[in-house]
Length: 266
Image (cartoon, rainbow, N blue to C red; front, side):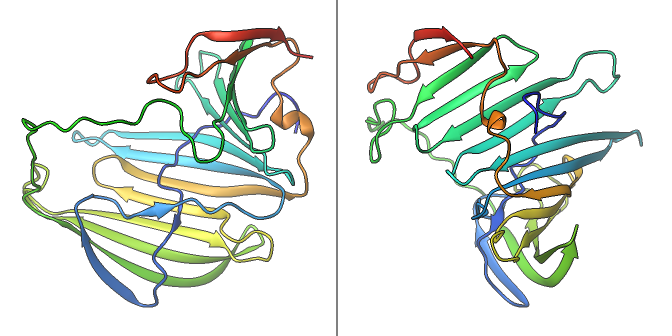
């Protein structure tokens, strides 16, 4: 991969490995409208490219379709890169790519955008510590709102299939929000289908995800290209000529302080 990341976009908070390990169907209740998920990281180096299509039908029948892509990379040192691009739907403006790199060895997180001129590096706290003060005062006047109804979810095992040459296991989760829970006069049914690789060395890598949400439309994420092996080291570095800004983080503030050090990239 070159220093210029391909046009990409994130979509997917919904594209995470499901934690429910069941066969057939299992029903459970929870207060949230979504199923508990966690991200499973593939355990061998790779570069994965995805095509994301979102289709939304408005009340007047108008259909909005947006097609974008996403690029993720993992190297043998555990460094992760995630690039997303916001593309002008009319095509008359330059797409802006946002890149985030997490380096567990250097314990830094680096972000930049392209086109751009600056990359920001944030040191990560030592293990067991966190940025910012975490004290929380009790509020005796706090108002606690109790949800009038609970949503329910069922998860179905879809078996295995080959996606872009990768063997994957599928699961379908259906979440139903009863009438009146969020001001809805009829039940809301959301379906989330996710396929994760079971191929040795790629366990947990998402190869396909489909979310059909009555409130936001249908979003499909499909793996279009997978390259195994260490990505080009440039993938994890800002482009040449970028100003590097290192942020100093106070342990008792709500967020990063002003930049402490600046330099110019290689």
